[in-house]
Length: 339
Length: 244
Image 1: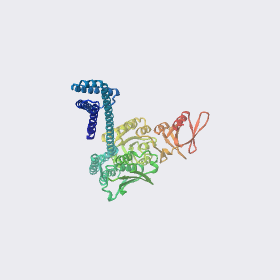
Image 2 (image 1 turned 120 degrees about the vertical axis):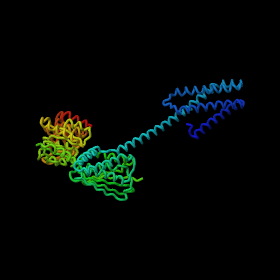
Image 3 (image 1 turned 90 degrees about the vertical axis):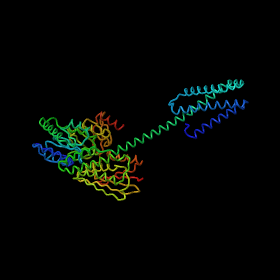
Image 4 (image 1 turned 135 degrees about the vertical axis):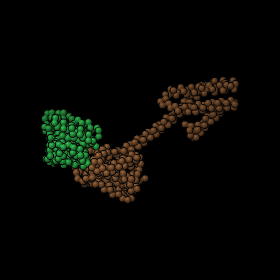
């Protein structure tokens, strides 16, 4: 509470004012200046010291659910101590008339002390209560931020186990028939996995880098499904250096290949194109699709959900990802705001 | 000679199995197919004794293919499925092989098949297997002569029990599939389909109205005009789902 200079000034000013009032009160009752000065200074200094130590204590010891009764009891003990010490000091002045006056006003002094102390404790209680609520809010937002980061990296790291095992199976087959191609495929798979591992979860990379990574993946898929898979990439030069969240395209290409390959029996052509639209990088991916075959199927798979969610977490917008069907083509469109 | 077929949508995956089979002199590979449609036609012609079958394939899955075969040949699945599915394979199929397949594992599966075909144990329970390995049904595949029909559940009005078969009533036609009504009921979304009678499962959205029939009995009228009897418990189930 006394960290800020402003708070310290208010605290000090308040007790100086209190001391002056005390002095003025005693003078108006016709007590000598030395007596009035002694009492007002001693009592005010004591009172301010008590309150300072109180706030210091409550700063480190948070009474979480303090009972009103304890508050009053504590205030009573403090006001007793305050009155007792003041009495000891002023009695050493040896003015009998004043001593009598002090003891006569004793109840008044005790009650004043009690009121001052209990109101001070209440103020501190409320103040520190608010402080800890603020801290709770901060902890909450920190936790949410952490959860968001974890979620983002989890969404990004989704690697299809099917893909990995099927690729290993293909390599296994090539080792006997085409050892050189098998070697090549192992390198491609390693590069692909390394990129997945080294990229930080929230990082942005250029469209060019993302495409390079994607081509590793596509080369592997072409070895597996080369007999019927064709991928066409048509990107505008101006889009190459635009930024996008790392690995955002891979689940969409995975989906396009999966649905392309599993929805139709014939050859499958996947296209990926890009352009600049309203200052945003726009990427379109299409795959062939069988309206009859897919109509009854539920959901769009984890890939789309994760991309949608990532875009929302990163940009706070729900409108950056769109899907549409035109004839026998399924098309997804991605809009990526540029910083 | 033992006639074997390999069905997988990846030529390289087929080549692995083909390579392993070369050591077995009593085996002849009668066909290699890249999808379920080709496979079904080839199976009808070749009548293989053993099928190496991938699960994830274009248009129809390995499970859907097997549901169409009657009787089904012995099957060894070759898949990249996760381990949680392995138990189900273990229970219901001759054997299952996880990709990539080692020679030792392949030989073990072949030995299992040879023992299996000698003792000719109970056949593969494909309905039970596909129920455990795949999630809720979202479409069904029906064989109509040599043609395949893929029917979306939203096009189905009602299922009717017919011995070991199920009649699938669409708007204007009725198809027949080898499947029991109870096994079907377990794989359908209970919010969409309701068992209204010992012999009937109805799609809720296909019902236009419910009429009293006798003193205590009711029938449901479907959008194509056909009528379905409701049993007493079926009627109360329907009332519950429809919030009447």
